[in-house]
Image (tube, rainbow, N blue to C red; front, side, top):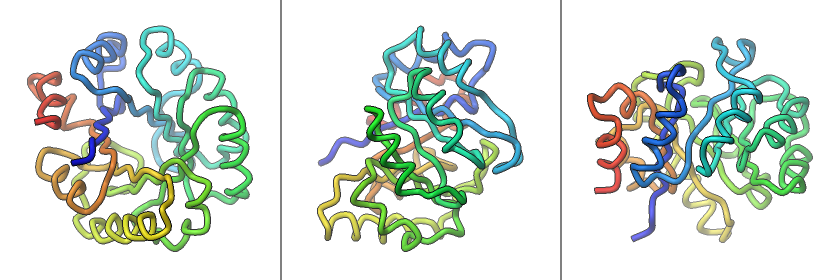
Length: 216
């Protein structure tokens, strides 16, 4: 059985205690942390920038999975790379030339991913799969944590799994949105390699045990 990557998302964490939460993630056995970057334009919310990422980088060696939910990632991704990103994912729905952006990110020495919103089909990004390290399938509309999992997105995970396997692409499938103990199993069965979870973890009475529950 393949190892599933569990990725706590600090979007739902206590921003006044992020250092503490990073240490909790380390203790849980998770090796990645998901950091959502929102600009108030591409999505109706504003979160953190490269200054915060740089500060967090000083506190941990966790793999930094940076999700740029911004209109112009081509202008800002380098700042996040310099701040300590290990993987930068941007959205398929932007207007920039996506293949060039993927190549630029990867040539800088880090990994590149692309994300698709619920209304975007796998066919929109299929030509990019040979160049990507990861595809992030959103199972909620991006912008706010705590939303309910969209069950009709499971078919999209299955389609992407089939395309990747048939072409032997070296590309992970990550799923983000409404991930809990029930929906995690559904996504894994559909072919997901990595699961992002925020509110399920950080709203729990014991966040450490909530992360550990994914490894059982």
